[in-house]
Length: 146
Ligand SMILES: [Zn+2]
Image (cartoon, helix red, strand yellow):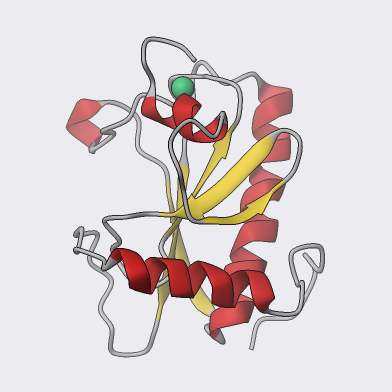
């Protein structure tokens, strides 16, 4: 862990998270202050503060991890639309200085605001279980959008 980074602690399993996807290099888990139902964060397990500090080869694989995670989460929820958001620096809204991509599922009429809500921890646990129980679409990265 670097500088008591909370995301490094999550990646190391020192802080619990609602995991929805991972491989040896990356981890995806539900945001506990979601912009929408299924709001997911994707991080490298290694610490890089932001986009500029992330090596390009890691970033290329991270982009694929984001795509796989988006397919898994939206597929499990039956949602076709989503935002990808990545903040760099405090003025841009980056609250944890460990690079992360947000996947924000969107439903028709649900708005497109980037405003944190409060999630019930039991609901998040149920949602993570639902996503993890769904047929695995994470590797079907070329699927057509509904
Ligand atoms: Zn970190």
